[in-house]
Image (tube, rainbow, N blue to C red; front, top):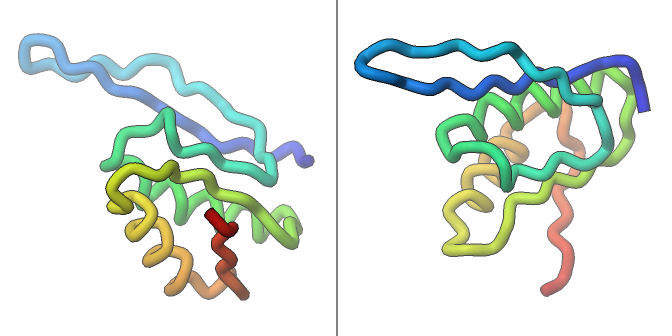
Length: 94
């Protein structure tokens, strides 16, 4: 899909110290599955992802946020609705 990469880092806190492991580069694709990310990482991750896919020329992407109580869905939709790069938001039927 492109040579651009997203970066993901997970931090582990041990006895008051934060361990910064090696950054993992993820390929930029037209699907972003948020299941593996912490809720606090979602807002900045989605914002960065949208900017990168826009710059890479993607016309359409899919963001998988899961079902659950709908909290994460509301956060993702809020971010997408106010992002200037997002032309439309479509929710698949249940």
